[in-house]
Length: 116
Image (cartoon, rainbow, N blue to C red; front, side, top):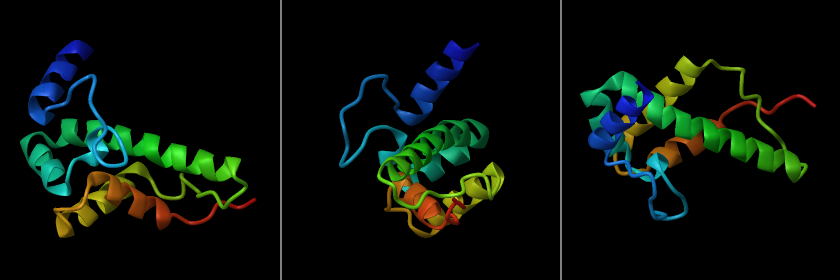
């Protein structure tokens, strides 16, 4: 069943298992918000599952890097996933030429600081 999802995802989003870096990163987050919107309109559940999985990796990585550098970390669980997804969609709806990754970074930067 999972292989089928990967084939559909590849067809819908032009995802390849091995891809070159685009700009400063890899993967779905380097696609524009307009490309995310197009994928979302074709299949909202699949698009959000794939893109948000990428977002969770970036958010986790940024928070772990901040922790390793003794910098302020973010309280990732203060808002739920539905709220986080909605904020990303809102960002992308108003900035179609920005990358999906920029929307995720905006989300991260607006999360409250974690209590130490």
